[in-house]
Length: 106
Image (cartoon, rainbow, N blue to C red):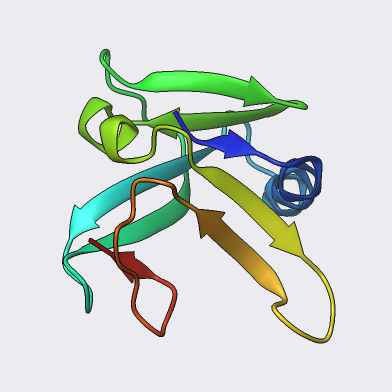
């Protein structure tokens, strides 16, 4: 299961609050595709399957399907707000190779 840093949880909570919709969770998934074989998906979702894995990080529900959870084991989602490297990033120890865009891995 992916972990969220305090900065990431705070930013996601801010974005969810701005959506003004009850029951939103952050879904993190790994899908085939991208430059290196797999790509990350992150979006707000209200639907949860019976086999989804859900974990709370400072009031933010993060939902991951079982197949993605295997590829995200030990990964960390961070958020930086600065002049360089601003935005969300995933540090995934399972990724053997990443591409220049930072959104795909193998």
